[in-house]
Image (cartoon, rainbow, N blue to C red; front, top):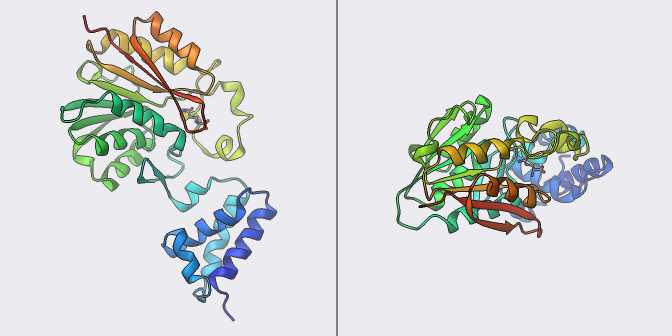
Length: 285
Ligand code: GLN
């Protein structure tokens, strides 16, 4: 006799719980709903329906992958960020809720109705760039990334969120990108984890997410040193730089900005209460 969806959720929960996954019930529901192509909230109304033949066999490899630590968002293939859906896979870092305050800080600095040029350095999944383009419809933007794979995902996310006509992409180092002097605002969530700390991160992050998106060098600040100095040399007067930072990097990044002559420095915290966003402006005069 075939099992119901509700029974399959319980089975999946036991498998994930047995593998030490916290929140096993919720993750089981997300995976089952994902395979059914419905919202997890709709599962309640389908709990007693018999699952089609082969459903558990399709779920089984996903449970195996999750049990060894592959992030849930790589298995479901998408996640929500700033109210929109983004495709997620091993090509780029998974969008984090923590980064939403970085987008919000950028919006504070982008006057409504004005045509602006923006760029996202180390765009990865494209979540910051796409959020700026969708939330501020007068904007055009460039996503810069060293990883051609990440850029292919960012392009797909721009298309998924209907901003592909306003987005372009540069594959290469931000040092080689020639658009610095043309944009009004640069946003970036660069790699900022100190190299030694990477081995201590959760295995989901450490073993599955791209190192290139995480490793900020010996003290975690390498990317900030480059971006802050290049921006100071090349960005136009009045242009803004908006950076995501690690919870303990506020003082260090602020000092780098001040040393390079940036002004009007602003800080914001994420929903967890950690310092997470810094903005600074090129002097106008
Ligand atoms: N916030 C991410 C993490 O701690 C790191 C992101 C980054 O290095 N830019 O997993």
